[in-house]
Amino acid sequence: MLSGIDYHFNYINTLRFFLLHQSGNFLNLHQIVDIKKIVLFFPIKNVDFLDHSFVFNYFYFFKFFFGYKAYFTGYESKFRLGLTTYSFRIQLVLKELDMFFFINIFMNDIIPVLNKGYLSWFLFSKKLNIYSFVIKDMSIFNEIKTNVGLFNLKHNLNFKLFFTGIDFKSSIFLINSLKIFLL
Image (cartoon, rainbow, N blue to C red):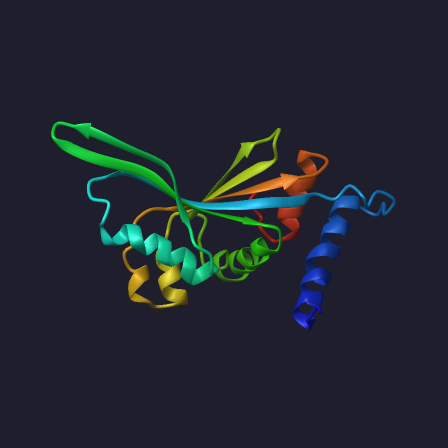
């Protein structure tokens, strides 16, 4: 059952998307872009000690803010001059209904606080419709919720939005309708 907040979100964002995308032509409503999945990750490179506290803080960050367990991927170790360094990604993949909570946090809590210097974005693949965002200032999560496990976050939070739909222009209209005025 939808609450009043859900109706408000649909009215503000979905209707705005239709008006921007169709520009008065409502005969073409079946060509709507869809967000397929969201991948959030921290790329960690050249760590000397795997049991360092900030490694565990990234797992705690994902569990605390999004309610899901993250996992390792891309694990690589190098032994050079008597020193072993480790590189890996701590990653969380959100699909279907799980990604709406992240979109809500991103639109309402993160974007209004960040300046353009702390949020960068780029088009990862125009053919596949993938946008990549990088949050460079992790202190905003300390301001949202003060917790000991969130003070030692040193790396940038990266996430990718995977769109499925008709064309590249539709995904640009969807991003603009969500008030991410990056283009």
